[in-house]
Image 1: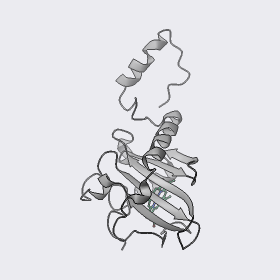
Image 2: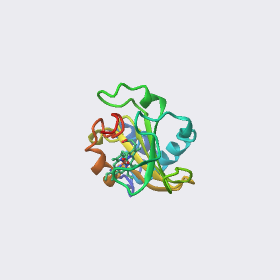
Image 3: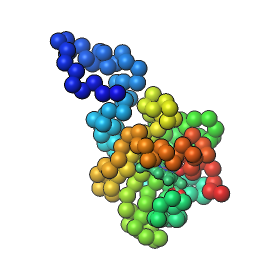
Length: 165
Ligand code: HEC
């Protein structure tokens, strides 16, 4: 949904209108400007991810099942403490690091998912983002390419909840 281009006399009322509409407001509504903000907040939230745990069997570097790249997966505490049934906890974050080679010494980029209540009910409320190692965002939001594959994952759009088969 986009509200850009609205011209209305009572423009000061717009924030109230936004808060009253379901799916709008601070949680993000798929508006690119909101997705940019969420991507920046998420980058800050993952600043210490390399101290997080890795789900069993998904420690890097391992050869990605879908990228011609070596990768490693990290779960934040919320995701690590989840029992893996039903939906992942609100605000939970998963990070996948991709490396330039099999040593895992140099990071080539990051893909990240965060559960944001109300963000995308049809897509399990996951926000997707892809970053260069310096934090430059190359994709953010309800990214069709990400969703198209992750909707086939075993558990709430996540592949690495269960050990690799
Ligand atoms: C063609 C399939 C495919 C696409 C497209 C894809 N992923 Fe994944 N993703 C996977 C698989 C498979 C894994 C498990 C690790 C591996 O083998 O790479 C994974 C793992 C992840 C993880 C770790 C959590 C988990 O689900 O295991 C994150 C975070 C992630 N991907 C984010 C993204 C983002 C962001 C995008 C879009 C920019 C994306 N992925 C696009 C298949 C895909």
